[in-house]
Structures are given as structure tokens and as C-alpha cells.
Image (cartoon, rainbow, N blue to C red; front, side):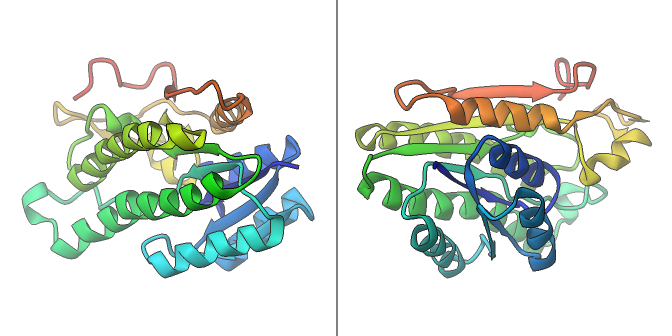
Length: 246
């Protein structure tokens, strides 16, 4: 049985991906801040799941997460680095508090790095050697929304981590790729139906897509043999304002 670890698995994209991996026969380690939400996801997946309350901004918490995964299952085949956050889109760049900036950087960038480090340590030492890391980028890894400096900057940085990890993982048979998602229909994107700020100053509703499209895409990326890698994949609502945005 292959083993996957999903961060931010209590809701939204993380929950959808965790359930999809479970349906494909993976044992799934579920990481997130909210124990109750993780347990609910685990209940949907079944006995081959392990909820672990985790703060990805804390290296010790991340180390404990991966230690728990290794103790329970003995190996790690797939990491989906999904946990993320953003600053309020109503605040201008120059008015953001330092604490708001750091909170996004700590989660979206440092958290991804800490998880990649721990995954590398397990994957390069296990037998059979290697594994796959899939980082959740974003359409914002390409172009920004208004008032999104912390989120956009960290998602651009995730692309750098993906590229560096892909290069540094070669010698260990670790494949690192990235999925860039646009307007998946989750609790976090409900506000898109009523209107999102656009680059020209207007506020207009934006189309969304079923989050299961993301889940299927991640399962596809995970399913490849380690001598093949989806380096970057973009999955988005067809009519969302991406091309021409920014």
C-alpha cells in the first residue's frame, strides 16, 4: 500500500484530495490545525487514514507529523503540500501589518519548505527509495490579484521551491511538481460568486469549478512512475479571468 500525506486536509482542496487518494487505495496521513475537521475527513476515508494535528509554521510540529507517518506506515510515497493562507484582500499593500505579512510567509513558504525537508529525509532513506512531492501553487504563482502581495509573493516562491526541489531530488529518485489551481469551488471561494476585485478597480462575480477536478489532477500526478514527472500543471475554471489578468 502506498502512503500519502496531505497538509490542510481538514477542508477544501486538501480534504477533496485526501478523499480521492483514499479511494485510490492510498493510506493517507491528514495534517491540519483543527483536530475535529481532520477526524471528520478520516471518517470519510476509513481505517487507512491517520489524522495528526499540525502547525506547519512550527518545524517541531512538522517533524512530529512526519515521524508519526513513518511510525504508523514505515514509508512515504506522496506529499501534497497544500496548507496555505492569505492576508485580507481589503488591505492595501502599504497598510499591511508586519504580523500579517509574516503569518502568510510562515505558512505558505516556510511551511512548504519544512514539509519538503522532512519528506526528503524519509524518501531518500526508504526502500524502495524515492517518492513524489506535489506543491500547491496557485494562479497567483503566475499573476496577482489586487491587494495580494503576501499571498502572491509566497506562491511565486513556492515555484522556486518546486524547481529547486525537483533538481535536488533527482539523485534520490524524488520527483517534485506543482499544481496551480484557479477558482476551485470550496468554502474559501464562495465569495467569488458575489464579486471579486479586478485589476481595473471593478468588482465582478467569477466562475468556479468543481473541486473534484483538482482532486483528479493530483491523483493523476501522483500515479505516475518516478521516472516521469508533471513539473507544472494548471487546472482552472475555464472562464475565470486568468489569461489577460494582472
